Image (cartoon, rainbow, N blue to C red):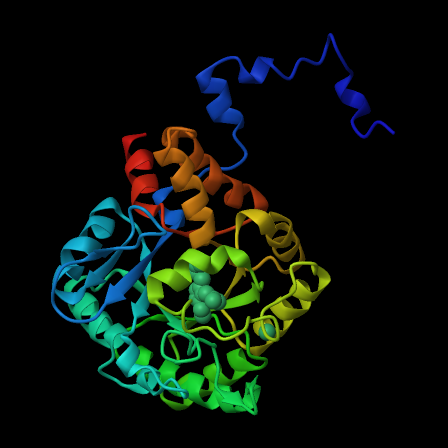
Length: 335
Ligand SMILES: NCc1[nH]cc(CCC(=O)O)c1CC(=O)O
Ligand SMILES: [Mg+2]
């Protein structure tokens, strides 16, 4: 069936006409990518000392607190609206309950206070989940060998409050426990932190693409088993809509789909169904795939970085968490 009878067909219809010059290409472009779409995830390292390269993510660093202002200053200068903080916690601070997550002087909280006082207008996103802090590497606590949903929620709520009090303005729960958005929202309300935003990792899949991230945080060696009892099955799509519906009902301000590129179909369905601010996480494995090929000279960074990010806009995203944020912003600012 012809859905566009009025348009006729070749030779009257020649779609190449609009592609013939830069000016028409710019006029008919349906989507744009700008610096306003970028969120830069940053790994933090304890102690004062040198930054450390992350070997499975060439170009990314674990940043120590004394280097943090210079490091983040680059994002601020480029106009990147927000960064997301992830702590590489040293093994001696990890335990089975992830207690360090509740320490108001933990790495994320120290970084948040420092960054808020230096860059008051920069958005700070804090990860809510226990895996950087547990010696078993799971996002919640274990009871009888299983990740216990409701016990974990209590700890996650405390973790959220501690971060918000340190200056984190957007909490991003990545734990995938059921009910955590509602619990976090009421905990924030009770603590008079009503303006703190919740960016829910609503549809987070049990993905192999997180491998380099777990290396960066040192949680891959620690992780016992896998996360398939709480993260979503990559086979599922309808279920993502249920996850998003619940999180919105419970008080999420923004939702996220993760990973990104292999899940563009999910992003599109979420945006079409709910019409709410939707984000994607172009995760560590996606970065390392592209970066590895770029470093070998097999892909052209001037083409693939912005193309991969524009794909998220086309699918319906408001913005993207990407380790390419700096490189993308530099290219966008160059015009
Ligand atoms: N709560 C853990 C968390 N938060 C963000 C990522 C992955 C990000 C990336 O791969 O870049 C993960 C990994 C996991 O679930 O094991
Ligand atoms: Mg959920």
